[in-house]
Length: 255
Image (cartoon, rainbow, N blue to C red; front, side, top):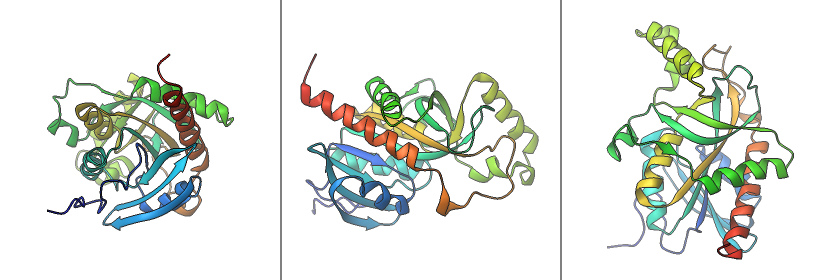
């Protein structure tokens, strides 16, 4: 059998130990342009991968597509290929009223409102980001002068239930659910973090996430934001600065 992995279409040696995970394959080139010597190695379905280096360490950028199932597939294959630190670089909708368009959220944990992670662990198992990754991302935001919030996000499966609840038979329940999560302290809603953090824990690797706020689904918006002009740079800055800290800490060794 071939060593090439079915979905990512990558082989051993193609992936660095550090991987940045945007959802959109169209964002991979933008992120990879910030690496040294990055080149595109594969593009198959929703999965596009670039690999280069950062401060002497191998770093890859792999898109996960939208939602838990495709994210779990990407994480499974990346771990088999040698990835050991995974950082989602994505977008979210604010639940906390004080968050605004373009703000940065560093994920401490994710409420498991999606379905994929239930195949890996019972629902009582927490989806928690690796502490070192959280601390590095928070410091990375400060390094680049970006204010950020650190906290819990909600991961969901149904995008349009968030964006257009009035069109759903369970509108009242959906709106009430948003209010409950917001009052409980969830900062934002998105679709991949709970799966990423749960699969990473089960597979014994570390993971975290940094998100850019692009809407406020709890209150609704008038149309979607322009996908060509999303405020992604602060989140990308934060992810790369955080990786630099993690790479330097590993190079320095214990203590």
